[in-house]
Image (cartoon, rainbow, N blue to C red; front, top):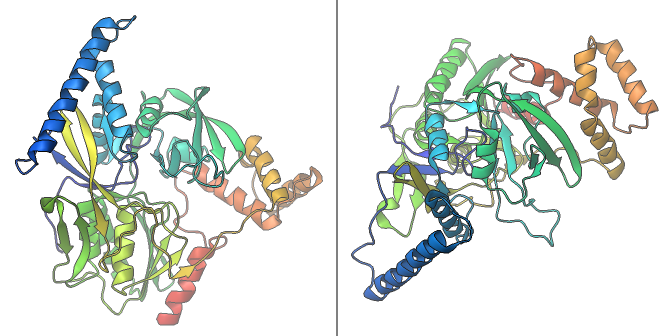
Length: 475
């Protein structure tokens, strides 16, 4: 097996994540302190810098000493730093207070406390375009088995309120800090789904451990769901491949749907399992020493005669897009599903005492030289999810807002007879969703409430069924 030098670089999605959890941004590089202005910088630029630094310092002291109320100096400093980064109009460049830094440190260890969400806030919101991303922190994906997952929070939901207060003007850091807390303590969250569906959940915070890989055989095909790229994921993937070998697998499905990213070192090592040589990913910056090319080394764990399908959706981000891009660009896999999230920028984290700043320094590029930042990766075979009619959407909203599906699952013995009776009751109450859709919602709810949900679902997962069909044609 091949091991690569570990680097403290993250390929997560969006800015510090959920509840104490998250990682954000695509690549993280940690340095010890704020760098000085380069000696190559022009004299006029240095003069401008000195001018504005003096103005900033004078304004800081004046406000500190003269504002009608006494403001703690650290609070004033944090406000100034937040304003500095807001001026960049980049959701991935942020000031991290001590709590946020600790959250990120916890994440690198693969375990932390919180509710189990990966979140992001887009700068693409336009009040004149109500169908674009909303001015709220968005759920990239819930972590399987966590309080948020069990509560039915989905990728694409928005954090609308926290403890009854609007979250419209909150940053990802703000939301992360509000959702974090002692395990066992509750936090009330209102979610916005689509353009108009809102519903309330109470989440009891818990110790969160990031799951990494789940695998199983589907006849002669090895199925591997990579949930997150942590320090443990490469070992788990290697173990899964060994299991597939023992079962004489003839094809491989790699499911990256809802995978928000993780360690760059982890995804590079895993990508290397499929290639003898060549480029896996590269980064490009206006600063020369931030440019880097990651190559595969000799030796593979998955033989070239094993056909591969990669499954993605709009929750597949960062590190998962690196693996997808490498396998797609080098014609090693067929990509199936929906367009990925589109997180392709690189951040460096620089320490400021106990706090830090995280600044976008570069973008990453797939082996063909393509940047997927803000665009995502298009699948080779698109499997579009069904869209609701206005009448169906209204029925769906009723079920969500009243928590109807959850109540049915928890209050009844779920079998074919009870499901059919439940569907008839819903239809009598004016619900116009198809029987198939209601059964899918019930199955999803059962899985969410399970501590050990099934690895895959061949009955309702159209993307997986398409992947199996594609792989069988190549075996």
